[in-house]
Amino acid sequence: MKNIFNSYPLVLIGETIGAKETLSKEKRYEKLSHSFKVLSSEKTDEEIWEFYQWRKNSYRSIRLFTSFLLMFFIIMGYILTGHWVIALSIALPSLFFYGFIAVTVKPERKYAYLWDNKELFMEFLKLNRTDSFNPKNFDQYVEFNEDALVCQEFNFQEELRILKNETNKFNSVKMETVIHFFDILRENADYPEELKCVQISDKDIIRFIKARFVDNSDAKLDIELIKGNKSQIKALFYNFYLFSTTFYGESKSDKANSYMKLYLYSYKKFKTLDYTNFNDGLVQSALDYSKAIKCFNKMH
Image (cartoon, rainbow, N blue to C red; front, side, top):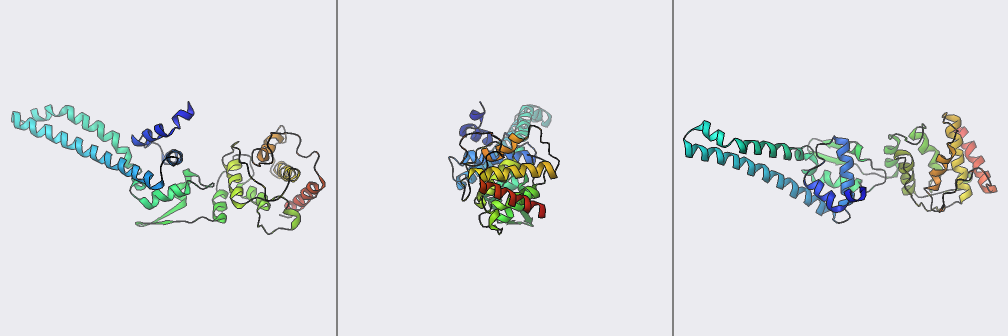
């Protein structure tokens, strides 16, 4: 049933009738983000923009038509009866109809700054494709300078900065600390060789941090390793488990599996969900890696 409501035809109908325009800003941004992703499967960015322009113009036409209809009934009532009171009485049903239409189409203007500003609209579409984008915080991504929109360009460091301001929904460790801990995964990070055993791309680091800590989701990421093996990955996440429970008071009781899921659902090397103790059977290179991580985190 959920898939039906997320289908292209129903999303298109929902956006056409403005079904979500009365939501709060954060909720509307979330729903708009989802709608854009669905619409993008069938439409180009320009076509999506044109669709919202067509909707805006349609709503404007409806307002104008109902206004004209109301005035027509009032004037015709007066011409036929010669009395304004009777004319207004005749036009009363039209007045109710006009009020209903006005209330219905008014929400479209609630977020008019999006439909009226192509640059801002396209920026939302562009950001919606990035892994670190949280639609609820869209206003933080752009700055308004009088009538001009200054859009920020996001490189890897800027995306990390945005993620640092998010809430860690996985455990109580600060997001900034989480990002610092896993910074050794970066392919081009400036760390001693003993800390560069497991490496992934910058894009995959963003995907990993967002999926596992910001969204706390179980989505399969299928991240390809640039360098490293299963044993070394287990060593890294076992150290994160120890780091969280030792320094941040996270409970150890029945929590190990949730920490294993961090890598089991993230890396392509783990094709099956094997919850074997991630500290058992580590090869020597992984044990050396684990020791280097412990020393690094004690110093930092």
